[in-house]
Every structure is written in C-alpha cells, then in structure tokens.
Image (cartoon, rainbow, N blue to C red; front, top):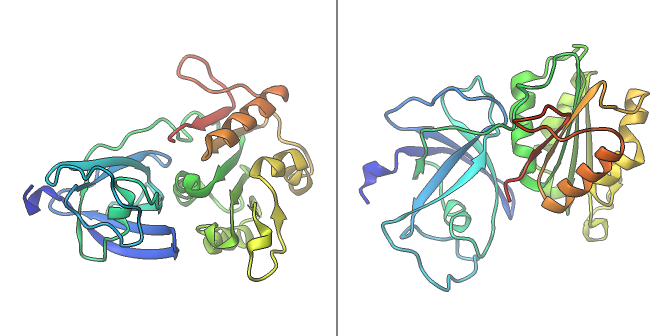
Length: 271
C-alpha cells in the first residue's frame, strides 16, 4: 500500500483516559462531504501499522498491506468542513483500535469518503423534546447533534443520560457540563457503575444508565415525565442497555422508529 492511499492526517490526538482517545482527522487533498449529525464515517489502517504496546497479542496477524476498516460515529459538528472528530475506546484484542491508539499528530490514516447512517434528528419534529441515552463511546453521535442543533433558550429541550464504569470514562463531561450551565433547555445526567473504584468519592448517580430513566431524573428536571406525545428518545451504546430501554419505553407507549413506520424510539445498533 502506498503512502498516498492513506488519504487523511491526524491533526489532533487527545487521550481522554487510558482507554479513550479523541482523534481529529482531516482529509488530505480532498474535501469532506456534507453530513448530518449522528452519522458515521469509516477509518482504516493497513495491517502492517504499529499496535499500541499494551494491547493483546494477535493470534493471526492480518495481511500487511490490507486495510483494516471500521465505522465510527462522528462527534464533530455537521457545520465543520475541516476535519472529523472521533471518540474511540480501545479494544485490546481488536484489529483496528490498538493501531488507531498508536497514531500521533501528523500520522496518516485512511478515511472513507462516504458518510452514512440513519441515526439523525431528521425525523424528529421541532416541537418535540429529545432525550439522548448512551453508554461509553455511544455518546459520540450525541455530541455531534448538540454541537449542530442545540440552540440555547429555545423551546425544544435536550437531555443527555450518559453511563460509564468510572468518572474518567465520562468523555466530554466538561463540555456537556458547560452546556448544561449555559443553556436552560439542556440537561446532563452522568452516572458511573463502579463507584467503589473511584479514587475520590463520586458524588453523582450510580448504577446503570437506564436507572436514570426509571428513577425519574427527567421528570424532576422538566416537571413532567417525557411521553410519546412530546418527546423522542435516542439509544446508543451497550446492546443490553438498548434492548432494556426499548422494552421499558414500549411499556410507556413509545414505539421504535423504522423506515416503514414512524416512532419515538431511535436505536443505533453498532456493536
């Protein structure tokens, strides 16, 4: 594979925690296509690319010149035309993420020129509130949605319910906390599932992110419980969380949105 085949460059790398990294990737010699917040792009590296040293050994090394490709949700605003931002968690036994984690600023990477995905706000009426529920890096498409569509002070309310194992795994926490303070129509509810492992006692919610919904945090914040008549709910992350939330929401009258039938539950099943 020639150097020119790697058609993009890492312009910024931020280690958000030992197992989470933010990569900004800019096209080299071509322009990014327009995209909708919530969509995904494909990153790739050849099999010969270095893996981060603390990843698991590969049982079968891939072909050196063959691209290893994976789809990742875009976290940057849809108004951005200079780069795409990706929020990535390492899978130590994985093919691609140990290679992506070894990248530094200025390194080359392959970026697919087609952006796709139906997990967007396109089918949500402007008069409906939006609840964004996620675990781990399932937060990425929501960051793009908020950066692209949140208008402070508007009548449309947004809320993020984000669960992670530890406080240091709550990516974008500072940005979302700032949004929460500045915008009276945006609420942010972080939660950790392993509070006993925190070096400093965690003062926030604990358990699983679906507990935030059943526990009524939005009902308390909004002074009314979201219903299918006034809200749409987005789910992204751990498949078990998504399925449990779908089941719970359906008991409350919400319906899953599909291409054939409109509904108020939107699920990104990317695992």
